[in-house]
Length: 303
Ligand code: TA6
Image (cartoon, rainbow, N blue to C red; front, side, top):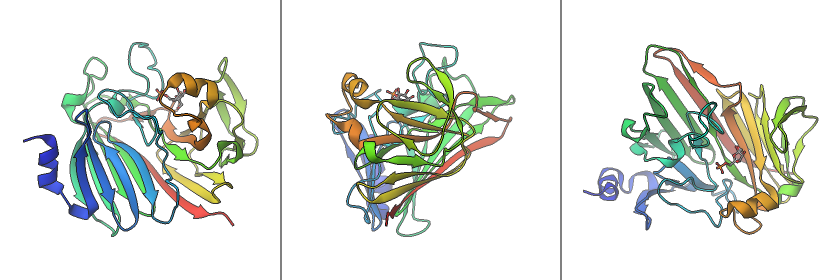
């Protein structure tokens, strides 16, 4: 039986969940409940869009030029970066942001713990792990609670007998009315690695505004951040646990054009605020221990 039919048989129509496959055979999970609409590609367990019913615009941004193709990361949504963030520390040939976002995951459960929210639980099968890149005994799970708020929890378990070091991130693309008018709060006073031009350490003063390319890793950032969006009169709250760094990224026009999948003027309508463990702030997991990266995204109206 095909993967699509298997999923339909097992979970079809439970909690507003439907399944479809695109031309490349990638299964998409469509969640349509009383609180929100969301779509998740099984490849990468990649949430592509989340739109709570209270909002006229989606909260999670998906590029109009996004390609959902085998082995490629989707431009937008919530890419799962694991087991490292950015370029690999010693192997330039390994994929940026790890391999988890471009390989097949499994949907193992659909639940309704608190109606009308739908919970999806995905795991990364061991057969999807390129052993040359990741020889460690580990298990990875992603839980998504899709409701008025979106909760994502990435759980890494160390199944081995030695400590395991991972970098990870929920590389989330948020939809904003006009990025030039938005402000990210919650990072005031922190040191960040500025990756635009020659990497340099700088200190943040006040909110983060965007008037050109921004690519920054904020260190020692474990508190809540918000995105203030006066254009759409809303504030997006990003609460998190198990994350020591926050990455803020917008490629701006020139880089966006070169990327080819960000869409015309797409860079003006998106902003990545990523809950991460990156640079030197990686996570060390003891033998038989686990690490949980947890985020909760919610929206409120600006008055
Ligand atoms: O998180 C910011 C960043 O690491 C940037 O440096 C930028 O390259 C971006 O991620 C997108 O990476 P990707 O591999 O998805 O093109």
